[in-house]
Length: 262
Image (tube, rainbow, N blue to C red; front, side, top):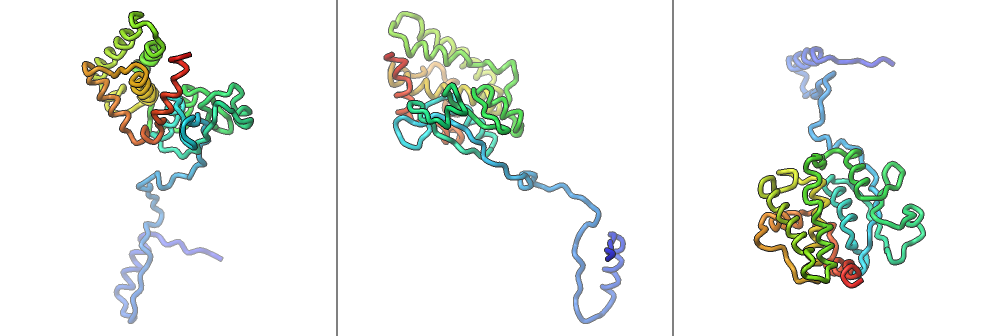
């Protein structure tokens, strides 16, 4: 059986002939641009649906079926959220690790994610792998900016654990926060300028822990003399992805208790 191919010029000729005929009924040819390929206007609509990513994270120790207080787990979840990827979050009780979890994470650490049939640990490795596999939207931070604010977390822990008010741990934290305040003042609102990047998704959860833990155990708040740090924290903490993936304050308090009293 042969197939008749109608070219655009043929279509126009047939349409013209039909218009000049008075047959007593209407006749309309399909409106198609034969032989012309058009790019879809919305490529996301055409995207093939992907299976949800499987990611293991710390479970809450204060409330059932809630995310726990690990800032590294939140970093991974923030990355997934900001890339608009579907995922299946598996909550792991780190005080009673199930056998299925120890099989995929022999060291018993979270976060762990399954990519290309392989379970990957470590938030640095995971976020970099996600950036390479799913580059849109891009979240990479330029190398020269990637370390901005990176010493805040360690100095926060030092101050939190300190029992000696004169050991300089508070001043060490203030020095790092001052440097970050100056940087954001000149380069903000985010570390990479106008858009959120991987460095923000790493630092944000740590600042959240800093605010809650120091407020509870030290009655200490980021001073008003650091307005750009406070504005940065407010901006990050109000992001939809952050609200969706943040730990309960009670979990943060319980999670840091061994560091304070241990």
